Image (cartoon, rainbow, N blue to C red):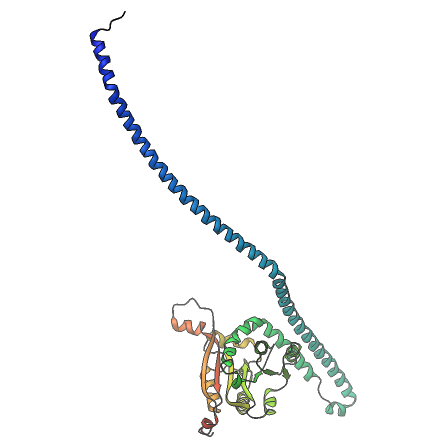
Length: 369
């Protein structure tokens, strides 16, 4: 039998006595760790609940997005043929319009060439019989008219802008007419050109017609179903009854006329308008230096620019009232710090004078020339 030395026995007993306290401390540490783990577990459970809710919300949003996507795809599948058809019709119409103009230009070019040949034949025949030549009508007048008509058509196509651009510029006038359709219709457009303004009025079911000297323009407009006569505007106005029109428009026409003709035109317009009817003149604005010195002269049929104050005075002096000047279509800004020079170079390139035929009571008080 082995006997421990007293010192070792005492140490062993002390360790044995301290063991419960050590176990208690370790148990307390384990309990603290368990508490911490429980808290972590609760936090993770809370986060899991939030993630589950977020997932459910995202799932719902995803399902809604899928529904929207499916609806968009279905709509596109349904509308695609219509969109393609509409684009195709637009392109076909633009191609048809250009082709029609080209055909008319070619026809009138041939007419001009034929008239040249006819004139030479007449001249040759006239050498044999001078009396017949003296009594004949010069064919070169027809040739010149045909060549001018074709040239002017190409000039407008090159410099005036597309049909959509011109229609957009005319939109404010349409809004003006729509304020009182009964008073401001029917409309007569003088110098109808390619008919952009008349086509815009037709789309809005506004009664309108036009008159133009250029036979190609006249044929082209009629091919589009627009009512346009070929002839002299003043002569046509003279054939109309007094107070038979609601509005007369003339876009970029007055700068082509001798001043005496402009006065006569304005007088005839005043006669055929209803009391309260509108006159609209639009013309290049010489307040813009680039217009006055360059752009205006691109068109060789322009005679001279008319300052806004002059045209305003003219319509008032001829008997119109409530005339106003509207400056239109500002140019591109020039890189200059000087505000005055900026306005001269980049100011409105066009302007309109809009005037009203006075009511009968007002007309009675107008001064007599």
